[in-house]
Image (cartoon, rainbow, N blue to C red):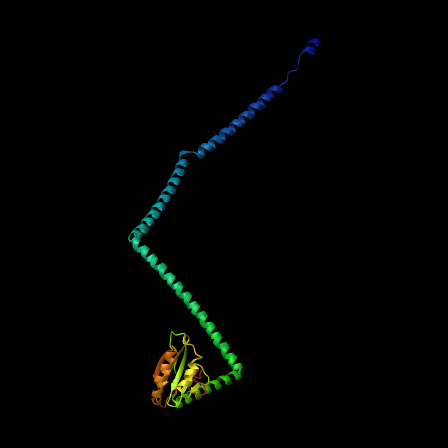
Length: 266
C-alpha cells in the first residue's frame, strides 16, 4: 500500500477556477454592453424621435413665417418705389446737386466777403490809430484842406475856367489866352508861371522851340482879342500844329499869373 501511495499525482482545481473567473468576467462585460444598448434604444425610441421631429418642424415653420414677413415687407417697399418715375427722380437728384453746389459757392463768397470786410476794418482801425498817434499829420492835412478851400474861393472870385486835356490824345496840350494886349501861354494841367507875349511875332518865335508831332494848342479868345485870334491861328497852321479854340467872357480867365493852366489843387 505504501508503494501505491507514493506513485499517485495530486489533483489541482486551479485551471477550473481560471475558467470560471474568465467566464464570469465575460458575462459581466456582456451584461454591461446589453445595458448600454438598452439605454441607447430608449433615447432613440419612437416617442423621443417624434418629439424631436415635431420640434424641428416647429422651428422650420417659424423660419418660414419670418421669411414670409420679410418678403411682404420687401414687396411693400418695391411697390412704393414703382410709384415714382425714374426720370423724375434723376431730375430731382440733379436739382439737389446743383442747389448744393450753389449754396456751397454762396457760402464761399460770403466767407471771402467776411474776410475782406474784416481786413478792411482792421486797415481802417490801424489807420485811425496811426492818425490818432500822429497829431502832426492831422494838422498837416487840415492845413492842406484849408489851402484848397482858399484856392477854390480864389478861383471863384477870379471867375477861373479849368480845361482838361482831350481824351485819347498823347500830345501835350497848351492853352493860349488871347486879349487885345497879350498872348498868355501855359501848358494845360501843369502848375507853373505862364509865358506872356505882347505880339504875335514874339509868339511865333517861341513856337520854334515847340514840336508839332507831340504838342497841340487851344486858343481861348476874349472879346477884345478877336483881331489877334486869326493871326495866331495862321501862325500855328503854318507850323503844322493841331489847333482848337474856345471863347471866354471878358471877366473870365483860364491862365493864372502864378500857377498857369494848372488847377493848383492836385
